[in-house]
Image 1: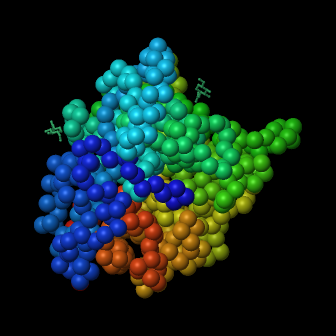
Image 2: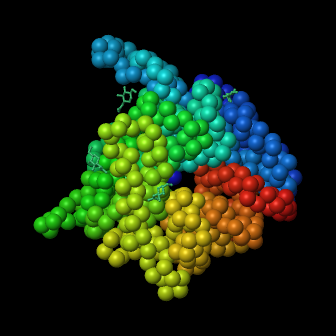
Image 3: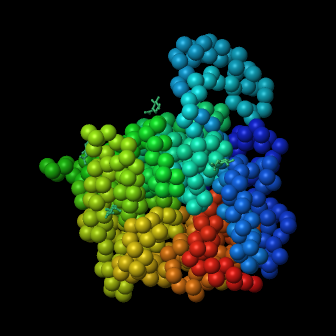
Length: 543
Ligand SMILES: *[C@@H]1O[C@H](CO)[C@@H](O)[C@H](O)[C@H]1NC(C)=O
Ligand SMILES: *[C@@H]1O[C@H](CO)[C@@H](O)[C@H](O)[C@H]1NC(C)=O
Ligand SMILES: *[C@@H]1O[C@H](CO)[C@@H](O)[C@H](O)[C@H]1NC(C)=O
Ligand SMILES: *[C@@H]1O[C@H](CO)[C@@H](O)[C@H](O)[C@H]1NC(C)=O
């Protein structure tokens, strides 16, 4: 999500795609044929031979939807957006390799001068050949976020969730199920490598060239800049790993997979990491104590107090998160939506642990206990009385009574609480919260002739995030609300027919991110959701 480093890759594209244009360039131009509706939307899918993964079931569903969706512009946005992750972001798939034995590495060091010369003479498209470890049967999938060449735990889990409704058990490496398994395995590896970090570089096995991510931020504990892309401590990143695991097992029933590799170890690391971020800011004798993770960034969002942020009351059930799912720093670190998501998916994925854990293990119990404690913490400390709306959920609190009253479009958001399964849609506190955050009483609500909805400090006030309109539809039963938001989404793509990150509420030509696969996938998800819940809406024309 973060835009600090935009890398236009020359190194990412696998060999088979060598003849294909870089999608980061392709995505800036509008391609024909245009849709036949009044918005004349471009066709943005790469040609089949340039797609990064082809799933026959996704292609079939796109064709099926041509007979379900009546409006030509809506159909065009759907067919451009939904396949985006598979079309453009499965940057590499393969099998994990065992570490290279030390004697082989030594041999390589002796000949490294020669390698350097070779590298200077060639275009740096390919890194120098590396010694290979023994191949295992552990699948790996490296899913980039779109226009940024790195794998976010959150984005990749959500990017794949767009296809969860089509997922079926399948042991073949060519299947959608394998794409999911590979992403779970790679996320487990990343979490074991650096559990506080949120975005990662390509795995060794891929031979994709990596660059150091070192910059002027001061972050502890230490992490490897060649493996990590950015190290924001975001509780929802760990929740996303559990969500992805839950999505996979719910669709396939394949519990046995979770026993094979490092899933249990990664979950244990998740629990230890979250536990460590519940401490009080003071010791019982009154000394100021640091959190295990600290973060200072000279440019934007610096947590105060020696990189710890403001004091937080500890041991109240909630887990501190230094950053939001927008990757912006939190004002107060008990970020309620992230705690909701984490509580929910700890509990959901404990069903996997219960199936595979030896009888003397305590991880299943630990997951359930922590889930319950967090939920109690949210209900006790995360609900605030609002004069106009009644009891509402706060976006962030500190446990001392301070609260930040807003919502951000990135998921987990307060708006998404029932979508995440944390509360029922009809819940009173949720409905109060929803009315407030979808009104001008949310400081980040933006409105105008182009599009109206929730905006984010990540892109400046006054810019609406299409993702928030999608979430509004996913959490609504009201036809008029659904249709109005769908119309805004279709008319605000600036002719590209894809979801942007943000769109200026008054100037349709001002938007951010031309290639943002998470939001694209979500658009597909909401249309498939409407096909089930509100098929008559897909029969409407929006011309
Ligand atoms: C598994 O997936 C592959 C690749 O999509 C497909 O060819 C095969 O038919 C699938 N097998 C089953 C049993 O669905
Ligand atoms: C992950 O599992 C593999 C084999 O299943 C093992 O060789 C490796 O050491 C494990 N990695 C970690 C970090 O535990
Ligand atoms: C589970 O065991 C670990 C130590 O291995 C301990 O730190 C943790 O508190 C235990 N959790 C529960 C819920 O018993
Ligand atoms: C966990 O899931 C179980 C079974 O669905 C449910 O009964 C329980 O209330 C959930 N706990 C929390 C804290 O959400």
